[in-house]
Every structure is written in C-alpha cells, then in structure tokens.
Amino acid sequence: MLDTIEELEEKIKGCNKCKLCKTRTNIVFGTGNKNADLMFIGEGPGQDEDIQGIPFVGKAGKLMNMAFEGIGINREDVYIANIVKCRPPLNRNPENDEAVACMDYLRNQVMLIKPKIIVLLGNVALKNILGNEFAITTARGKWVEKKGILYMPTFHPAALLRDDTKKIYFWNDLQEVKNKLESLNI
Image 1 (cartoon, rainbow, N blue to C red):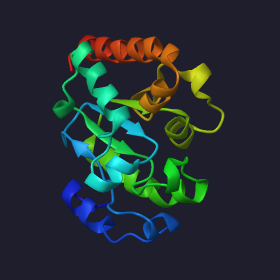
Image 2: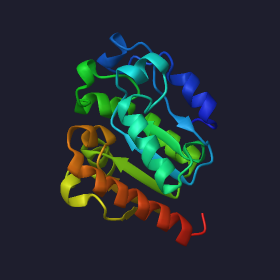
Image 3: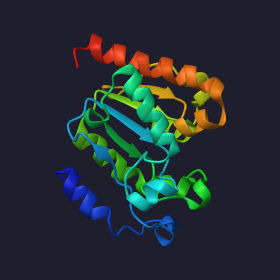
C-alpha cells in the first residue's frame, strides 16, 4: 500500500496490467476530496472520461451532478472512483480479469480516503465490491455493512439515461445516503 493518493496515482500512470492499457487515452484515477466521508464507485470510464482523465464528466456524470445539487451533496466534498481505471472499448462492462487487475488500486484508494459510506453505482461495482451473490435490482436501496464501511448500492447514472423509471429509485437512494450522513453527524 502506498502512503498518499498522489503516490498511488503516479504509480498507476504507466500501468499495463491488463489489455485496457492498449486503447486508453488517459488513466481515470479518481477525483474529489481526499478525506471524504462519502465515496462513489462506478464501473469504468466512458469516452468523455477517457479524454479528460476525470470520472463522471459525461452525460451520466452531468445527471449525477444534477441529483447531487437537488439533494444537497457537494461534489467537491465526495470522492469518485471506478472499478477499472481505463476505458473498456465501446463502453462495455469491464471483464473480470480487467477488474481484478485494478482491484488493488481501488482498495488502496479506499484505505487512503477512509470513507464512512460508499455508494456503489450499478451492478459491476456492486458485484466487484460486495460479491456475485448480489444483484442491483434486489440490493439497491439497502444498506450493507462490511469491515466498518456502510455501502449503498444504487443504479448507475447511465442506466437512468436508458430508463427514466429508475430515476426515482436513484434519487431516493441518494436521499437515504444524505439522511445517513446527517444522522451520523458527518
């Protein structure tokens, strides 16, 4: 484990642990408050994120920002990362070997940030963090505690762009997260 987020980010800049390194423009490490109590984990960067090197800056990120504003979550107060740090071709889901290759980086990020709550955005994040026995449709909106961290699974913002009916669930889940932060005086 590295001692700072900056050291970790520097270490992975030349990563070639999986085939995604061959097609990336930029590594998309993570962004936000390095001492955040609230962390969001998505699946992997899309095209806009690959170009800018920042997670959740495309259409899904804009939708997430709107939800943050509506609920009163300041994006600068949270930390945002992904299961994989490089864009899968055509925005496909990361393959298992790709996720495994990046998992130590993500674990190191979590250990350095020390969040109290992690929001898992979508099925890929949910299964890679909590296990394959979980499915987003049945787990979303339900708190899971593991190793002293509270997890809230919810739909990935990209899923909301494909299916408007999921927006209310996403909103309710984020509201629950906001309420939990307040009840814990965070």
